[in-house]
Length: 409
Image 1 (cartoon, rainbow, N blue to C red):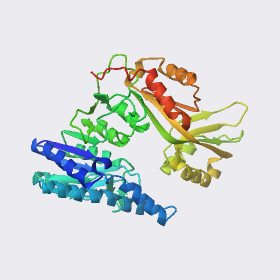
Image 2: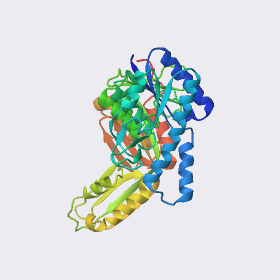
Image 3: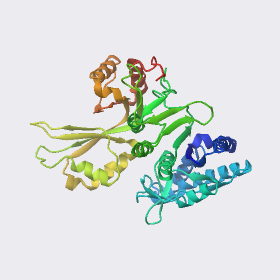
């Protein structure tokens, strides 16, 4: 029997009624002759509620204890879904992340999976049971419960699919596939039938909330076929794979946007002769993710380096830099909040010059100021004022005619 890993997010299991609906969806796949591993998230807003309770208790809760607290959300879901499957006459067994053998690095709240020892899951599958696994969590070498970061259930599902040699991994969500942009905010956003791993990875990193970036990394590394599809409708989703047939003239394949961005600028004295890279080594050691970097070296002026971080990491970033000020050798730091990042992504951009120019020209005509820029072979990102985020995203979606492109490939 081929193994199929299916993952259902928080909105898909938000109520007991929806959990029963999920059980029926799983039953249909099970009757097709698949061995099924179901990975689930916490119900609805459970994680947010747990975070709120923690914040009522402590101003800065311990990351270790937060991991212990937050993993309880998925444990509720796996037990209820197992019960729902059993009520349909199907044998099912629930597994927490550590019972599933998911071993992570020793990084509270944002750990990466190091390996999976899936003996218990494989045994359940051999006994023709459906394995229901808690997403988002694992255990480190010291026996501490860890979490994989928000959206980490996607990563759990794909990693398990790779470890078990699954036929494919299906991600069920509240949308019916991957769109050219978020259809809730972008007029004319359309669903794509196919998308490459590289394009999806960029979109996920740049703010598209459909998939967790690490899940796409794992899928790409293991060439794991992956489908994004609706939890509610029986329709075809979007297939992620190594290479896709790019639609004619569709150089840009998607527009992503992300709010709560902070631009930080570090000022040095004219006499500074050290490496500006030291600051990023220090931040990396403290697990602070830096995105766009702009360095300015002026012959007759003080050097500066600017970079962007998530607003949620602002205070931690400031604290780390302050603690290492004497060794980093900078003079002072300024930061600007209320910013957002808007990006265009497309594998066809590498062989089509002029895409960035068209992007900047459209933003100029829209009266949108660009504060920072980052480019790669398949994406261009700009940082703009938060109030301009949706205006910029809609304008770029229109500029590259993503609404007009046929979804046929």
